Length: 224
Length: 412
Ligand SMILES: Nc1ncnc2c1ncn2[C@@H]1O[C@H](COP(=O)(O)OP(=O)(O)OP(=O)(O)O)[C@@H](O)[C@H]1O
Ligand SMILES: [Mg+2]
Image 1 (spheres, rainbow over the protein chains, first blue to last red):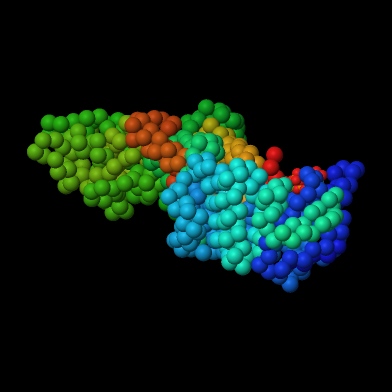
Image 2 (image 1 turned 135 degrees about the vertical axis):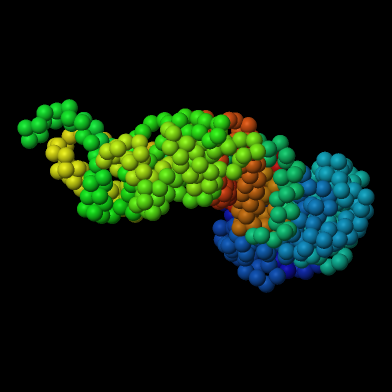
């Protein structure tokens, strides 16, 4: 599903250049569930953003589902994100003035699905997350766990091939974290590739493989 | 761009940010409101002045006799010039380009009576063409004709005011009745309406000039010759006046440059000056109005800039979910267009409403009447508004399209 080789990425700020990714090689098969761990600032989010086509890389090669991803037009990148990828963030990133249902339906808006159909499908996904009764609540009326479940529903509604989660449990207590991990495991069980960045060992242990990044290099790959 | 879904998306954002939307729209509404008021005031002023011009073709030329002020061919100054029927005839035959021509006699106010009713009214002896020159609005019967002149008929065309003074109570039919003018019986053959607010003009009686000369004056004298210049340009009209002057100066032996020997009133000139003045005023109003709208646009643009900044995170989220740059541009632009058009429309309606109110409740004065903003102005303003919205939204939309999702979504 994902194949990257010799990915390099530097951030240039003024005179300084920070070499963040120093030649990453990684292959993730379809339907895998892996976790990425590493110290703060080691380049985990940078890697995930490149995988999510939210950011460009400097050199190397990235194949997503056999498609070469290199300096795509914004339009093309947007279409790929819409069809192939789903994002889950530590801070949920829900649109604050849209209710849960509207938030979940948003990706379908960009697939030109009619409003009625959108809302029906969104309701199904919310129901699957056990949030049917919360459909018309604004994000600030939901708990952290509920918010993250809305975000996961939103990530899934476009039927993506890959879910990219950057510290999805980072803002949640341990009980809620376990719930979220249960859901992500269920998602993975439907055949969707799941990649989770995390600091927590427990979370990493729930995935099948853990990749450790140290200072811009992959230093360890462990099967759990 | 015009799918209903997009509108709903915009509607929901606007709906959920009411205060912001209101503040954004207010400046535009104000701008349009002011523009409409200004244009309305301009038209009120114009209508007021136009009213002063009413009662007479806008291409009329009036030539009256006066006293010489320059020595000429050994003749001294201060001679009274007296026009005669021959002057009228020779201008009629030598000057070309006019479409109506008439001589006039000034007899002042005369006593006009019918049975026991009477009044003092301005007598205006003239030729049939004067009906066109003065744009006399006949509401009953007819104006003078050539047979009246040729046969010295004692017929009269009376103004509405004259009619209402003389024909009262049970005897309100004026047509065909005989009225006494200075003791002489004249038959009423027509009634006219005069829109002028000048009392003299409304209390007027037209009679054939030939009859008047014979009955009231007993000599071959006229006081004024007037004609309309048809489709002639300003220069052509000037040429016609010059020719008339030449004819008259030859007939009466006075210096053609003597401006006191004859007085010329060329309405073409007045109208041209008037038109130029109001074209200037209108231009001025548009400049101010558009200036106000531009201030509104800058205001909207500014607020939209802030809005885009505030919404950076949301735009980042939308991008991560698959929003193309174009869809983001469309979102912001459409929002700006919707807000400005809607707000502007409110300003338009309020402005027009206020004008209507003023128009209905304010008595028309000498220089101000019927302030109005016509349909073409409303259409112009609408186009202007949509354009304004697009301009106001353009830079913010470009800024929004350039939002980097990685930076937008980074936790602070
Ligand atoms: N836009 C940027 N410009 C400059 N430097 C950046 C930028 N984004 C990230 N960095 C730097 O790149 C390095 C890697 O950042 P990254 O966010 O990938 O780390 P991370 O592994 O996700 O850390 P954390 O666990 O704290 O989230 C850091 O030193 C960070 O300061
Ligand atoms: Mg990170």
